[in-house]
Length: 375
Image (tube, rainbow, N blue to C red):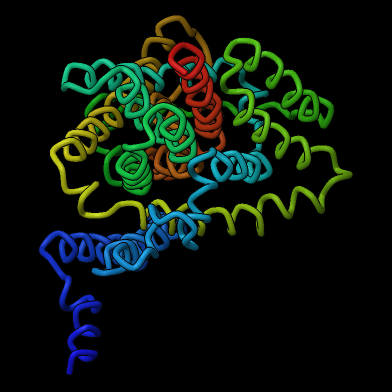
């Protein structure tokens, strides 16, 4: 009987509490969004599963949780803590990214830069809500809609908030098709939504090869703190464009990024326990994340409208300004979908990829600036 009682005391049924149940339900909801709604399933399914796993009552007590030194989850989480996973994801993203749109129309980089206003607006808002400057900097990156960069910066400046920040960043990345369209419609006229942009010029292979090299040098000189992330991004892109490293590029954009995505999603989810997540601080982070994402979207659209005041021919469709956030290629697809709702013959996706990839670079540079000042 004594052994039976000891066994029962180790079970999840004996140790269950309201917080654990709430987090398990939240994890199942993330899995539901990924599978049923297809909201970034490659991210939300492993994150949701990790939340369920990390909140099983008794797992932490038996030394199996993320925080337990020497546990499997603890070893896997090392890649998050040290910024290894975000860097490897950036290499895969680089191998998947086509910078043609940005090279063909360089002024679109301004839209990617404008969207980063959400980062600094959130930084100020976070300080006003009581977070210290290191926490505010980490929370601010959520405004760039860039999960890997948010994780990278939080791991350096505010590791105690990493789970909440990562969950907020990936959640809003997944909700791009829901959050952005109302803001885009609110800030544009029917005439502006129907603007057709001229086809992009043909970009040579030499330009595609030189771009990642030049871009790495320029951005790293501006913000050395971003050199690792951007180095991985541009390395992946260079492997793609050389034409002689296809095997490496294919590995980076398939097997490598898939493995790392599973590990980062699982461990970040497992880190998000009830004790960490069900707090007023986390609620504030999610509120700030939503606000920052809205500000970033609006900034890109409004800046495109401002640019049009100085452009006489080949005006920019303001809908592509919303793609300045870093959610690649989801934000560019949203520009295409919204544009075609008003003109079925209008194809904006290639134009939107310009500010979209510029946003990836911009958020990494912003993170590098913050890391250089505060790190």
